[in-house]
Amino acid sequence: MEKIVEFIENLDKQKMLEILFAIGVIIVFRVLSSLISKLMIKILRPKNKENKDILQNPFYLPLRTIFTFIGIYIALNILKDTFQINAETLAIITKIMKILMILLVAKAFGEGLDEKNGVFVKLKIKSDREIDKSTRNIILRTIKIIIYIVAGFMVISELGYNISGFITGLGLSGVVITLAAQDTAKSLIGGIAIFLDRPFKIGDYIKVDAYEGTVEDIKFRSTSIRTLDNAVLHIPNSEMAISAVINYSEIKKRRYYANLTLELDTELQKVENVKLKIEQMLLKKDYIIQDSIIIRFQEISDNGMNVVVIAYVNKTNYAEFLRVKEQINYEIMSILQSENVELAYNTQTIHVKNES
Image (cartoon, rainbow, N blue to C red):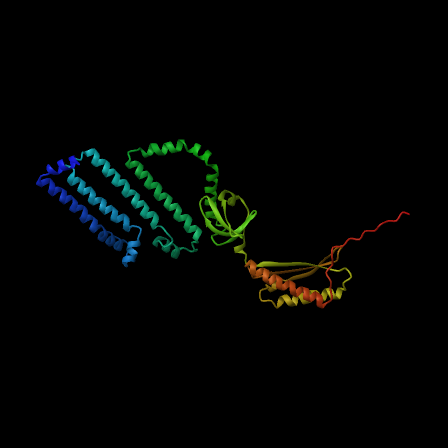
């Protein structure tokens, strides 16, 4: 407190003017930072005309902060003689401001990258194929990682470290890192393979080994699947890349199959009548693909005569397919009843030899 009082008492008119001028510079830059930031965003992003859109722009806050930093930096240069700020202290302050600016710009670019970004909108318009959500997410995450890596190297350079030596050091320790994170590395490679092959996308219903459900997210390391019991399952991409994946969402038609075992003593004319009525019934269904209907007396077994019914249904939704399958089953059973044809049971006759 005494030092502050002593400093104020030793202030002359010239120093007081310098302090007031420096404070004025900071206030002016702070006040104008908002106006200049809005103007720059309007120039760079002409579509952002509304004040609300400008304030929500990811570059607005970083630009304001940068202009405020510039005002503070100019004020410090004005006051370096008044407060006896040496060159080393000023250099440290300058370095801190540069690092903060680098981080702010990186953060702005990172937050500005989303699916509404103008670059992605143009790519979607010009691209021959639609860019699905999972592909967009992977591209965005990759670009963000690159931005933050570049920003990190710039910060390291500002701190005075040799980037070349740092990268060389990473190369020497790469083997150790790889050995320590083999599973992670495999999952990352698996994520790239999934991105390139695109066997499924977000929203698809898939089955992988013993797991099945709806794909919710595809990340670099794992794929998230919402299972039938509503739990979220995270499967490493290393497993996804080497496993057989059944993508039910790509099914264009589903197969109806029934194996009817008629009793051996069924009259052949009734067998023909059953076949004909089932075919006529299927032909009347608009959800049955007409040229896919196959009804054949396939074989004679120990239990009876096997008649197979095969037809493809254009209902790809599984719940809808079960509904029409049930309907077909009911009508087939009605046809069998109308012809007085019984289905055979799996029976076995045992003969006991009497040796007496």
